[in-house]
Amino acid sequence: DSNGITLGNSIELNGATLRDSVGNAASTALAGVGDTSLVRIDAVPPTVASVQTPADGNYQAGDVLTFTVNASEAVQTGALPPRLALDVGGVTRYANYVSGSGTSALVFQYIVQAGDNDSDGIAVSSLDLRGEPLTDLAGNDLNLALNGVGSTA
Image (cartoon, rainbow, N blue to C red; front, side, top):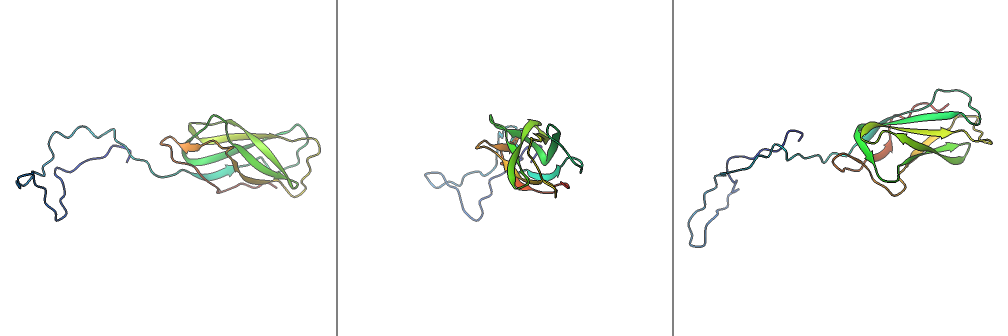
């Protein structure tokens, strides 16, 4: 609810009765209700909509590979930012977080290391949160399933 909750004009008794201590029926009309326009609800967790990968090609030691994880809404990182786990020729490597907290696009980079070799393309494995939260601005945890991963040939 992005524009605030609203209240009806009375208490719904659902077949029950409200009485005071001597048996008088209570008024169910709501009077003096404060402004609820700033009482907002967001219980929908963000998801990974897509993962943009570097262009297909051959890379060598020192080349920078940039990956962008696009979420369904703005997300924020914890004190220790996440990293993107990659499979480079059967070896787990990590693309380090570069930027994007507070937006829907988190950018990660991996610098190709001497000795890396993967002739059939690297694989994007998972988001490694390193024990820190990755949430939307309301505090809902990001669903970590990596949807829409681009080609890594």
